[in-house]
Amino acid sequence: MADLTQSPTPAFWSRLPKVWVASAVILALVFVLDRAQALPVLTGTLEAMAHTAIFIGFAVLAIGYLKATGAEAVVAEAFKGRESRMIFLAAALGGLAPFCSCEVIPFIAALLVAGAPLSAVMAFWLASPLMDPAMFLITSGTLGFEFAVAKTLAAVGLGMFGGFATMTLAKTALFADPLRAVTKGGCGCGSPFKGTPNWRFWNEPARVEVFKSAALDNLAFLAKWLFLAYLLENLMLLYVPASMVSSVLGGSGIGPVFIGALVGAPAYLNGYAAVPLVDALLTQGMSNGAAMSFMLAGGVSCIPAAIAVWALVKPRIFAAYLGFAFIGSVTAGLVWNVVA
Image 1 (cartoon, rainbow, N blue to C red):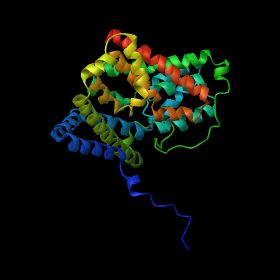
Image 2 (image 1 turned 30 degrees about the vertical axis):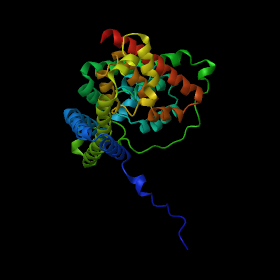
Image 3 (image 1 turned 135 degrees about the vertical axis):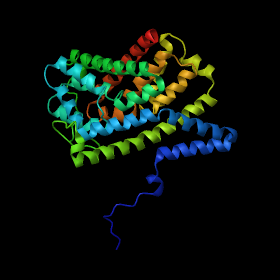
Image 4 (image 1 turned 45 degrees about the vertical axis):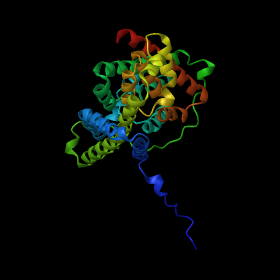
C-alpha cells in the first residue's frame, strides 16, 4: 500500500528559479521576434550589471554584517518610551533597518502583542519597505546620491506622517480595536542572534557562518532581480516611445505625480528591481516628482509589504495604511519636483 503520509514531490517546474526563467523567456522572445536586437539587449543588460557591481558588492557585505552582528535587535529599542519619541525613532529605523518583508510580520506581531502603540507601528510599517542600506547603495549607483538621500528622507517623513496621523486619530472609530487575531511564528529568515549586538562578529564561528550565508543569499537575490530589471530597462528604452512616457508622466504639475503614485503598485516588482525601471522612465521623459511618487507608493503597496500589514490588522486599518502612503507619496513627489 502506498504511504499516503508522505508529501508529494514538487513538480520540476515549481523548483525552477522563476525570476531567472522569466529573464530567459523574455530573451528568447526577443531572439524570435526581433533577432537583430537580442545580442544588444543582452549586452546592455550585462553592462548595466557591471556598472552597479561595486554597489551590489557593498550592499551584500552590509546585509551580511547586519545579520551576523544581530543589529536587528537595536530596532526594538525604538518602541519604548513616550509615544511621540517612539514615532520618530520607528520612522527613522524603519527607513534604515535591514528587514525583509516576511520578517516584519513576526517582529510587528510581537510588538503589538507587547502593547506597542499602533502609531509607532504604523510609522515603522510605512518607512520599512522604502529604504535599507542595500537599497540605498543600489539607488545611489543608478539614480544618483541625491535621489537616494531624498528617498530616504521621504521614507522617514512618510513614516512620521502616518505615525502622527494615527496617534491623532487613535480614539476615533477608524482605529478602534485595530488588530486581527495575532499568531506567533515567522519565516526564519532573520538574524538568529538576539539581545546586545556583537559588532566584532568575526570572533564567533557561528556568526561568521551567518555572515557567509546572508551574503550569498542576498547576492543571489540581488543578481536575479537586477538582471531582470536591467533587461526590462533595455527593452523599455528600445520599444517604448519616449513621447508616450513624457506625455503621461512628464511635466511639473500634480497630474504626473498623481499618476506615478497611482500606477506604482501594479508596476512595482520590488525595491531593487524598481530602480532600473525608474531610470529608464526618467530617460524617456518621466518627471522627477513622478519618479519619487512611483517608488514611494509602489514600495509601500507592493504585495510583500502590503501582506505584512494585511495579516495583522483589520481592513479599515489597512485602508488607512494605503491612504497615508498615497498622500505622503504625492506630497513627496511634488516637493521633489520643486527641489530637484
